[in-house]
Length: 237
Image (cartoon, rainbow, N blue to C red; front, side, top):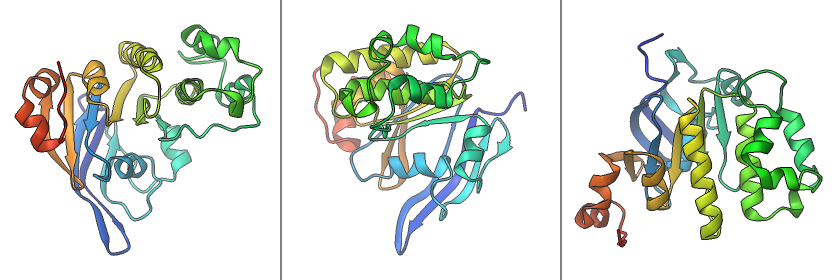
């Protein structure tokens, strides 16, 4: 539906055995990027996995563009328009960069293999190298490229800058900005507050399986008390 948010999550609960991990998470996002931040163990990755249909125990409503996707299998969630870049990259060590991309690429759509190579020149240089021979930054670029080749309406990204050198983080941030400008929706899960606020003006903070705060980048960066209370971090801005 034209007036529906791109992604709408309502009253989402997830249990792992007796452990209640997500406590009624509710959020909406549209064309503008949304960053979700929080400390380790707060439920951010579980939320990503629940959106993608990877958590059978999830209870609640999830809609993409007004279309209910709750309870769908992961491959069907991908088909309706959500691309997923999981934490840890998860590339195939024995497949070359080019083989990875050809598994997912199609001749149609805004994102083609040629566009990927234009956007990620380093991948073009390493197209014959296996996934296991790539650096962490190159693997992350490949994971992002792989998801973009599905030409998703929404990209869900879980900790894309984790473990990367600062110079590579800068490159990834610029790619995320380009994705935002391209019209693809973006839900970015990040522990790196500077990355989250550089990519998105709208910020949500997750604590103990709940959305504890919704604010904007400037408010969070300029309020040390707010950062201490919700994130336990001190930064120079």
